[in-house]
Amino acid sequence: MSDPKKPTPNHRNRLGTDTYLAHGGYDPQDHYGFVNPPITRGSTVLFPDTETMRNRSQPYSYGTRGTPLNTVLENIVNELEGSEGTILVPSGMAAVTIPLFAYLSAGDHALFVDTIYNPTRNFADTMLKKLGVEVDYFAPDIGVDIEALIKPNTKVIFLESPASNTFEMQDVPAITTIARARNIVTMLDNTYATPLYYRPLEHGVDVSIHAATKYPSGHADVLYGMVSANKEHWPTLYEAHNTIGACANPEDTYLIIRGMRTMGVRLRHHEKSALDIARWLEGQKGVGQVMHPALESHPGHDIWKRDFSGSSGIFSFVLKDAGPEHAAAFLDSLTLFGLGYSWAGYESLAVHVNLSDRTVAAKDYGGQVIRLQIGLEDAEDLKAEIAAGLHAAAAV
Ligand SMILES: *Cc1c(COP(=O)(O)O)cnc(C)c1O
Image (cartoon, rainbow, N blue to C red; front, top):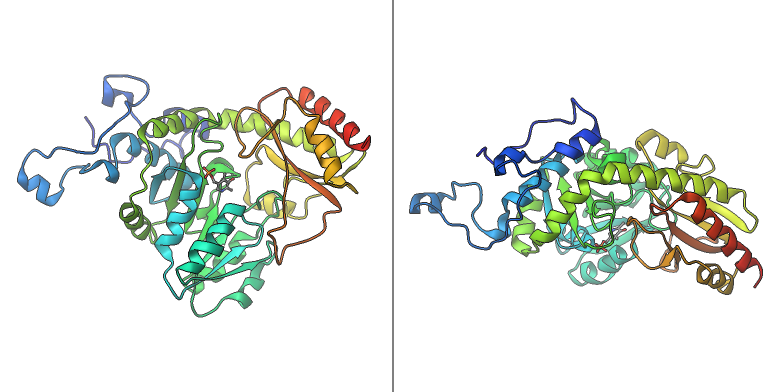
């Protein structure tokens, strides 16, 4: 058997991404030709003798420190992200919190984009502050002006581009150039794009974060997180993960590997339908701004076009001049769209977005903001249902 920790050959530079997703990370001949890797369960790993045990001179030493199955997924993600190493954790939130624990200490200062995923903000405002970390927020369009917010103790800048719920783009290279000059670690929650549509490490980001609960799972049946770091920042992340001990479950790891095999195909369907519906919505009565970065009308469209190779299946729109009762009428009329949190599954979802947590990026959108996750259904069926929902809202 080949060394399981040896990275698989770089297929991606020779072949297309879908080909890499179909074959990357694992050689079936390592396990008797079975197409998929076996699920490795285990705490104890036996050593052949005391010398090997003393030196830990074998690829695996204990279940929390990695398994052959983990290595398959780590290889795939490192290849896609261009990262030195990846940790696998039990949820997207763990993928947010573990790197913050890794790179921050009492007395440090951290900057977060104001349009951040709300539970990330909650972690910053409660746990980080409790541990003595100063936290400030900046507007998503800050660009090079971020320099003015940096203090001598600033250690981390946390980005999420496009933003949660309202999809503002951030000028990532402008921010990371300034951060690098000051030795500040930059992290980016890359859940929206997946590494197929955005590779943050190529834009100067040090740590890329994923709620793999979303597209890598794709079926609303797994909670999972992954964090990838560049060469300079990998040792700190790796040690923090081992210290905290939040390792992912093997069955879930297996399902995420399975999800990765079809992610390219699924993502393209989500992308096509979402963009089609977003363009159509722009012309509908009662609809204000449609917040989708691949639309020419989006204020961050130029940045999206410069840095991203695709868009995914989630966007928001404004129910113009509407109150909460109109939003409720729209949402309650839907049947194919479920009312529920999370996204990136095969099924469509809709939520009334709450933006009351925002400070420097707070603004009036001129109505109620509704977020749509476009699933794998036929786009025409979804459009018909949205059209009926707009009528229901107008009838209130
Ligand atoms: C869903 C999500 C998370 C958290 O993922 P969970 O697995 O639900 O904890 C983190 N960041 C973003 C941007 C998300 O959409």
